Length: 409
Image (cartoon, rainbow, N blue to C red; front, side):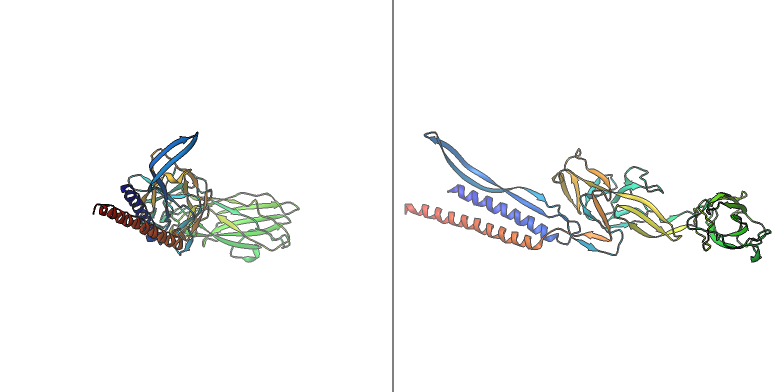
């Protein structure tokens, strides 16, 4: 008789813990990146006896109730919420963001609410630093895994190289002009075009190219800076073949007097190898490697986890590529609160890859909790009824015990 009391009590305790788990799931229905928990019940055996009659087993098994053996996490994908913050990030697929606290402990999370702190570090709501790899100008990983830092400004860079690139063209149909190029006399040149270059302090200067067709397939080029129209900073002669392809005259070296206090001229190499001379309109298309000081005006994160900084000088800088970690057995992860997980042993290391490999990184989105409210309410009703049924067993046991005690009367 007493055994049934303990059996019913085990049912009460187990279903009460189940309700605790359900209530935690429901409480976190609006928690970004939350993963719901599920309970696993196992049975208890109070008595198990096996005898044999004529070599046939006869089992006597009386259960002792149930208990919650473990809880498991549901790591299924949550739905996405669109936001206006480019540093709100969601992982579309497998893995976790990696964040590090000031003590050097790395945590794993699906919550992608990030921002820039005063130092330019990308941090989560608790100030932990998002981890990734620094990139070089070509987009290659150039340093060990570390915090992602976006400079709030970039220093100016002096112009050292100019490329005249496709579809730059000098019209072969124009008339030839004799004499020397004079920027003040339009009759001495066929075309002119200006572009901006920068000195070492980031000061902009206007560089103007003048093109003169001196004979069939031959062009003279002269370059002048700012308002100086008397002394060219560089010149050259371009020779084209019968198909309009440049065969000589590139590169041209410019020697530009600086206004930043430096005593040596600014040397700029002009690459014209892609310039053509065909029967088509004049086109001038050039790029150069200098720029002025720039202040951060925006941040973007691509699907492959590449972080870019956009600056007021028009530059878009490759900053870093964030890291995504996963585990062969996610049940090795233990909840630490604040949407954070840690492996339950120090030796259990993650698989770490750049973003875009295990999962795509969605910028401007947050992953919502994967709690299914309707399912949790059904579980809540089931747990409540199971609790009531076990309580009724105790009431029934009490009534039977009372009857047994009344036999002596």
